[in-house]
Amino acid sequence: MTIDLTRLRSGIDKEVVVEESYSFSEEELKGTGVTSLDDVQIEGTITLNAMHELYLNLEVNGTMIIPCAITLKPVEYPFSILLEGTLEEILDEIPEKDTNSQNSLDILPIIWENILMEIPMRVVSEDAHEVQLSGDGWRLITDDEEKENSELSKLKDLL
Image 1 (cartoon, rainbow, N blue to C red):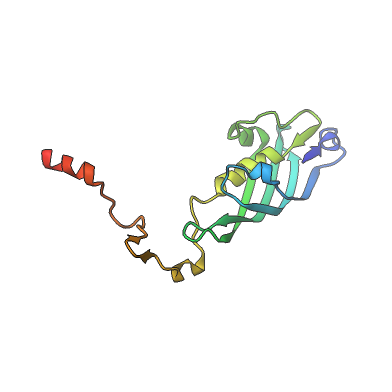
Image 2: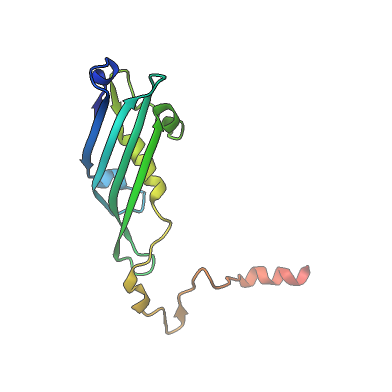
């Protein structure tokens, strides 16, 4: 998602308006825990501040599909990210720093890194509470319950 900055840097335009929609492929989502991430809306402006630094003011909105932690059914998880600051400030937080050149800017790595930070550790669907959480010889242990390892509990007696 490369943006041409030639007219902005030459002073012809005062800002570059960004209105894009992007769908991430399965290859891009591999290893993230996200099943689907389609129609991510990127809107905002890119301007030059008084120091002639690129200033980004972008809003990223979308809905990611994540499997439920209990039932593995797909759960929609909406997100909204506000990216505001100079390009240097934003790039300091991103390991891939080859996103800009003098006349163009690839904002996709910036957006991707910020979306990765929005992925929750786990989600639970609303209908997961209707699922049977115990059975013949088993039950679901939640985070609220104290987990005790019987082998390690023997060490308590030594102390």
